[in-house]
Structure formats: structure tokens, C-alpha cells
Amino acid sequence: MKKLVIAILALSFVACKQENDDKVKEVDKNGSVETKVHISHLNDSLDVMKTENIFWVKHKNVKEVTRLDTIPALGFSTEQGENSAGQDTTLKVKKNYQLFITVN
Image 1: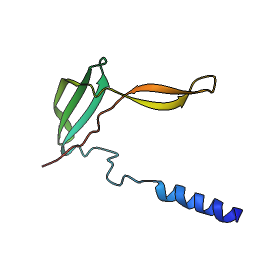
Image 2 (image 1 turned 60 degrees about the vertical axis):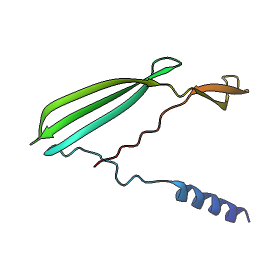
Image 3 (image 1 turned 180 degrees about the vertical axis):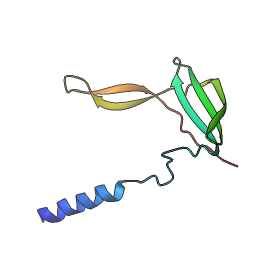
Image 4 (image 1 turned 120 degrees about the horizontal axis):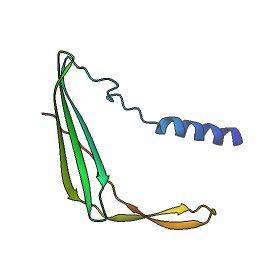
């Protein structure tokens, strides 16, 4: 019975592992637009979204455009965690935006 439980747990961990097949490891610099998006917390009510576009033509960086936008912060959520003494505590954590990019 113990071996069956261990086998089920092992299969569960393997099945839960998600592969991101479309994750780019290297940008094709022959003709492409590379876009980087980063959101950081400015204060309790504002976040900053930094968008960088790099334009590649024939393996040359022909133009870079960086844009900073101030956006409203999403507020806080509470999560359970442990402090340094090992005691359970409730933590107040800033919420993060989800990023979705649509290409036409």
C-alpha cells in the first residue's frame, strides 16, 4: 500500500509539471521586434509599467523605444506564512498584474 501511495504522488508531480513550448530562448535578429515588459511597485497606490521595444533588421539593432507608464496599483492581498521564529502569521502582500500579449 505504501508503494502505491508513493507511486501516485510521483505521478502527480510529473503530471503537474507544465512545459512552456513556445518560450523563446533566443531572438531571431534577422527581422523582428523584441518586446520586454516589466511592472514594478512605485508606492501603495501606483505601479510603473516599463515597455521596451528593440527593432532588429539583418542582425542590427536599428531602434530602441522605451516607454514608462504610471498605472493604478491593484492593492493588497493577505497570505499565510511563517516568520523567522517559525510561527504562522498573516502577511500583507501587494497584488501583481497578469500580462497578456496579443500579436496581430
